[in-house]
Length: 105
Image 1 (tube, rainbow, N blue to C red):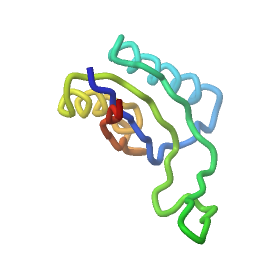
Image 2: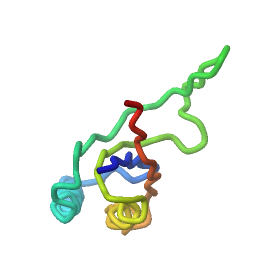
Image 3: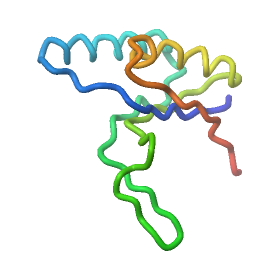
């Protein structure tokens, strides 16, 4: 079954411990809804750098990645439907870029 990368952009840091617990509950509920489709729950990421021929941007660019997840789904439509359930998408604080991980074998 094809694998898809969810690259997260945006989001917000919880301001209180209670907000943090609510955020984690929302993410855990979403992962539970996706069930065995989740191959690697991923992680948030720190500051990204963009490496180009002859230069390195330490700012992460215009829309830096904030985290990732790897899932499996029968097709892009199903993967996008999973992404629509992301807590960042639902609360409007971020977006999910969905790309198929191509098998090079």
